[in-house]
Image 1 (tube, rainbow, N blue to C red):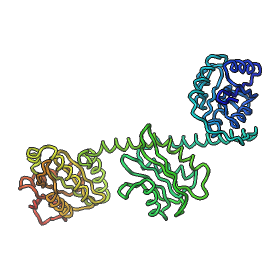
Image 2 (image 1 turned 90 degrees about the horizontal axis):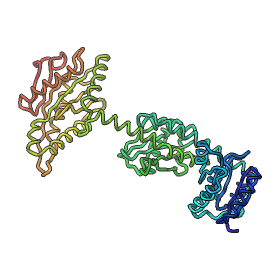
Image 3 (image 1 turned 180 degrees about the vertical axis):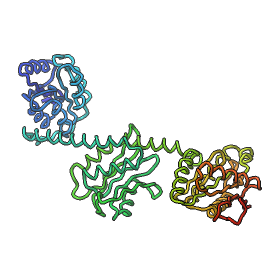
Image 4 (image 1 turned 135 degrees about the vertical axis):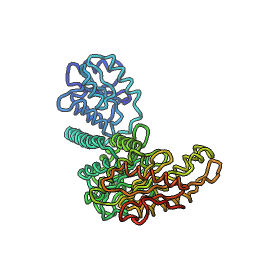
Amino acid sequence: MNHGQTIILVDPEDKGAGILAGRLRMQGYTVLEATDAAEAGRLALTEPPAAVVADLWMPKISGVQLCRLLRSEANSRFVPVILRGPEGQRNRFWAGRAGAAAYVLKGRMGDLVRALSTAIGATPACAIPNPESVVSAGDLRDRIADHLDQALFDSVIAGEIRALGSCADFDRLFDLLSQFVSQVTSYRWMAVSTEAPKRFGLHVNPLVRTEIEAEARSAFGYDAEVHVTPIEDDDAYADREGPAPIVLPIELGQDVIGHVALAVRHPVHPNDAALVEVIARELAGPLRIAMLLEESRQLATTDVLTGLMNRRAFLAGIDAETARCHRHNRALSVALLDVDHFKRINDGHGHASGDAVLSAVGALLLKLARKGDLVGRWGGEEFVLAFHATGVAGAEVAAERRRVALTELDVRSAEGAQITVSASFGVVRLLPGENAQTLIDRADRLMYQAKASGRNRVAIDTSEPGEGCSAPPSAVRAA
C-alpha cells in the first residue's frame, strides 16, 4: 500500500461518506473508511496515514478530541488532520485550537482536495510507526480521557501563572508563585531567575538553606554576586539530595528573559516535567510586567548618574523618617554637602569628567551608609544624607569621615589627569516639631557657611541642648 497517498476518512453520515470516498479515490488517494472516530483513531495510531479527514462534531468522540489525541501520540504526531463542518467562526476557532491542518466546509470538494495536497506536502518525515501498536476502543477512550485531564491540568496551572501578572515586583511574584507550586507538587527547592538584571528567587527549607543556595546558583550558573530573594519555610522539603533539578528557559518571543528550576523529590511524579514546562511557558508575560514595573519605579525614584535616591524620593523618605522620630522621640541628623569648585572641574576637564566625579561621590556615600540611613542626590553637585538615630555629635563624626574619604578619591579625567575632589558639609539635628524641609534648609545654610569659611570642611549646628551646648550656635570644623 502506498502510505504516502493513504487517507483515513471518517464521516458519521453513511451516504455522504461513500460519495466522498469515491471522489477522493478519483483524485488518486487510497481511502480507508472508518465508521466513527474511535475506529479512525485506532487505524491512525497503528499505521499512520498521509492524512485524516473527519467531521468537526461527531457522536461520542469529536473531531476536536481525535485531532488532539493524534497530536499527542508519537506515532501520529505529524499526521495532518483536515476537519470538516458547517460555516461559522466558532467552528474554525475550535478546529485551529485542536491543531487541525485546515478546516473545510462540508460539500466543498475542491477546497478539501487543495487542503489535503497542501497539508501532505508540508508534512515532515514521520517517525517510523510501531507495528506492534494495537489500540483497542477502550484504550483509545482512556488515552483521550488522559489527554483531556492533562489539558485541564495545564489550563488550571496556566491560569494561576497568568494571574501573577498583577504583581508589581519580582519579589511579590516569586512569593505567590512558590505558594501556589508548593500546593501542586512536592520539591526540595524551586527558583526563578532573571537575566537583566541578574537575580533569582529561591524557595527553600531553612534547615538546608546554605547547601541548596549553592546548588541553585550552580544550576543557573550564578556566582555569589547575583542577588537572591530567599523564601524560607517548611513548604519546601529539607531533603539534602534528590533528582537533578528540571531547568527550563523562560522565553518572550526570541529572547530568553530568565529560567525556572524545580528540584523535585523521590519518587518523581509524572506531571512534574509538564508542570515546569507550563510554568516556563506562561511565566514570561507576568515576569516581564513585574520587571518593567520595578524598572519604572526605580527610574522614578533613582538618580540615573549616581544610583542614589533622587530629590523626590529622598523627600518622601525623610518625611516618613521625621514623623517616626517625632513619634518615638528619636534623634535624626541631616548633612547636606556640595562638591567644591565643581564648575572648575567641568571647565578644566570637561563635563564627562564632572559626571565621573559625581558618580564616584555617589558610590562612596552609598558605600559608607549604614542600614536605615538615607542617601540622595539633592541636585547638581549637592548631596544629602540622613543619619538614623544619630545626634549632631555623631553626625559630625560621620560627615568628617566622608569629607576625608572624598579627598582620597582617585578620579581621573579622560586624559588620565588626577582630579582633586573635596566637599563642604552642613550638619543639623532635627528639632522638636520641625518638618523635613526646614531641617534640610538649615543644613543648606550651614553648608554655605562652610564654603564661606574656606571649603572642604564641616559646619555643624550646636544650638540644641545636649548636643554641644557649650559651643556657639554653630561651628565650622576646618580640614
